[in-house]
Amino acid sequence: SDVAVDAQKRLRYLFCQFVEIILGCQEEPLILFLDDCQWIDAASGALLNQILMMPNKSASNKQRRFFFFGCCRDDEVNEEHPLTLMLSSMETFGTKTTNIMLTSMSKETVNEMVSTTLSLLPRLTRPL
Image: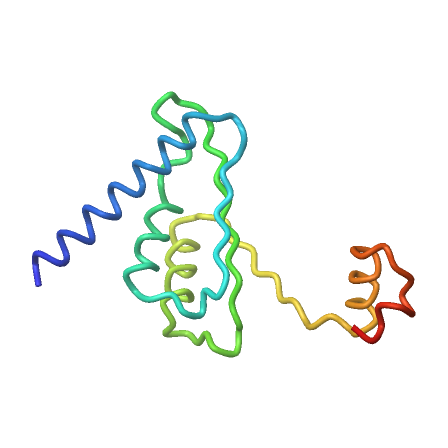
């Protein structure tokens, strides 16, 4: 309905204003990390798209430093998926995107990380 659409537009506008205020209050970059983006719906994709397409300069004419990192299972995202559509829209309007494909870590790598984290020899953490 029109009321629901208007409410979504107001929410997107207010969230963009919120992000703009945070960016204006600090010199450090703002980083947004979202995991499991394969579950993103059309409304969330539209909100994220609007945030990422905000002008690169803030109201005080300072360069905005905003970074978005999203993770998803690529086997669950196709050409019609809201995330794919959002990324395509961003690229169409000149927003730079980078796609990094990661593979599973080997057992040896995981064991090395656990060993380092626990400050134990790798032979002691291998059974974990």
